[in-house]
Length: 343
Ligand SMILES: NC(=O)c1ccc[n+]([C@@H]2O[C@H](COP(=O)([O-])OP(=O)(O)OC[C@H]3O[C@@H](n4cnc5c(N)ncnc54)[C@H](O)[C@@H]3O)[C@@H](O)[C@H]2O)c1
Image 1 (cartoon, rainbow, N blue to C red):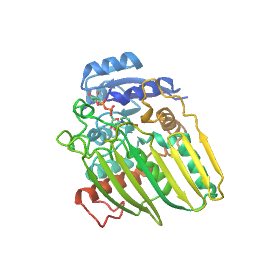
Image 2: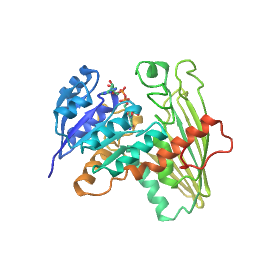
Image 3: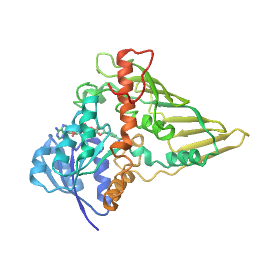
Image 4: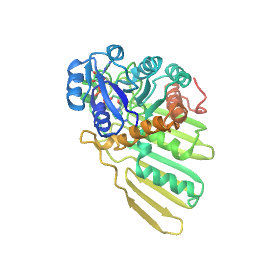
């Protein structure tokens, strides 16, 4: 079996989850890591293996890598992906792949490169998501008529001010939508298909003067005949479980993280508490525990020469919907937009 030599850039919070996942994965070797804070790279290398570098450029010069994991702030994902792809190195980047339409145009160019590009939308690998997709695919629930999705979490000022990049439009690109709730937007796309209409409004309720980005985003979406209501905020008092509910012709399907309930039109109710794969000890519950599955699938797809579900075409609808929602919210556009229409 081929062993992939992996490099990782950005040895902060989420990198720990990648490090732990890579350590346990057969057929990969964490060869090197890089961070502009050299002590972070050193600590990371000590914990997970490989050589530490003080920049991505030095790491790429010093190592023959097969793939690069990008765990840096949002605005750096596209330029770093381009740098790696230009050297024939496969790319696995944290979400979001881009922060603007301009970056999205550049990122899509990577489809022409002779490398694989994957984006970490790990919640697609949650068992509860698989179950809902199976129920929908079976046809028993009938057509989806409408959906609602709520992400109500708690973030205080230090979360932004101490990071050096969160809360700034230039480096984070946005707030609760692009960062905390993009996974849930992605799940709506997984369940409902291609969005056809999007309108949104955003506000900064509790961190005015602290962050430039939104702490709250609400959107009205249409996916053909189905409507979806989306609400995300970091102004809540706690990290409540994310809720996604699909109202279908014959049943209402409800998912609160790993709890799934199916309420059938005839009054029957079914409830499933699904065991989530064990999260690495460093992974916070709200990040979702499916990083290992997502990363493992990326390497299986490489090895078996299969398309990776979270490749560029596989994330296109979600990325374009996110950018469209920002366009709508920034324009204060009451008429809404056709999703995926571009800038
Ligand atoms: N998939 C998920 O559920 C999930 C969860 C958390 C974070 N993330 C994503 O992971 C990314 C990082 O988030 P985080 O919370 O780990 O942030 P973080 O601030 O903890 O870590 C970022 C690291 O990147 C380093 N860095 C910054 N600029 C660099 C550069 N030019 N070269 C090399 N290193 C550089 C920083 O020093 C820091 O160590 C973000 O895109 C975030 O959205 C994804």
